[in-house]
Length: 219
Image (cartoon, rainbow, N blue to C red; front, side):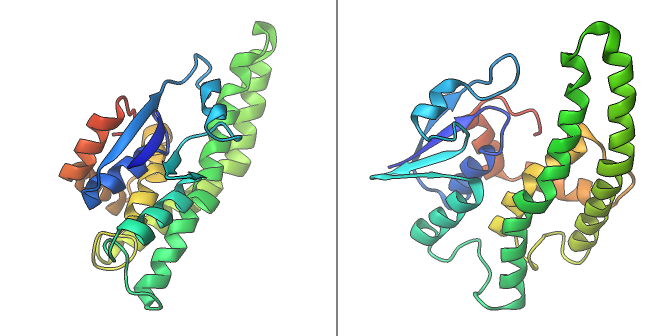
């Protein structure tokens, strides 16, 4: 039996969604965030990094969403949700599988950090820090995010999916950065990103995964 160590409002929601799309049995062990929104220390007993998701099956303990998605598809997927190896869509799939965490999430995380730094400072210096962090955001994160949003919209323009004409696990991987961007930042008037979110949120497997995983702020 697959066991997923799942943190509320986190990347691990994608793993539950993948399992629901594949119709595989699994167990969920839920963890709630602490008041400062960090993961609870109990996760360090599961994996030294103390992050989620973590997959357990047999003697295997595996962290990192992309690695977990690849493991599930290679061991249980029977060729589903993956384009043909070596095809143009197959390479596009590989790109977005890694791009979701490697390139898309870092500027979104940086923007979140910049917004929180002033709130942890003494009251008297918060206005100064807010102004400084806003300047960093305007110069550094905002231009990068705008490039990413343009890239997403152009990538979705042809078929509505990220890796070819059919829904794939690349769309599952990309769901979290897209959801986080729309929720935290907004993506302006780009046409194809909201449509992508509407279609994935309407999928029965997506809705079942949210029911299994519990609170999810980005749905």
